[in-house]
Amino acid sequence: MHDGDVPITAARFSAVARLLADEARRRGLAAPGFRSPPRLPDAPRTIRRHGTSSVVAVRRAGRTADEVIADMVEGVLVANRVSGADAERWRAELAASATLD
Image 1 (cartoon, one colour):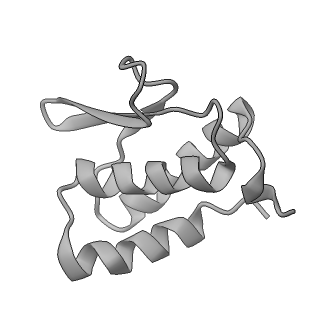
Image 2 (cartoon, rainbow, N blue to C red; image 1 turned 90 degrees about the vertical axis):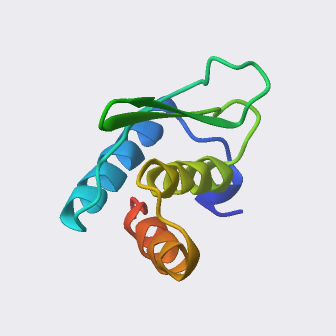
């Protein structure tokens, strides 16, 4: 079993959030804030926009690290309104930057 198959701890969630925010800024994207859990009880991920900034809330409970990190990456893309071929490229690049190894 690799680390992505187990639940993500709060400390790792915070570390991944910092890595993704740093990488988003490095690539010229707006870095959203991250929190857990979402306010909606059944939502795996929500995004709240506050003017020019966004907060991505991701549910950690009952989910693997891979699932949570994928939602965090997707949250960066949605917060920046990235879609299509750009989203595919950036999704892979942001996911690669989220590793803590």
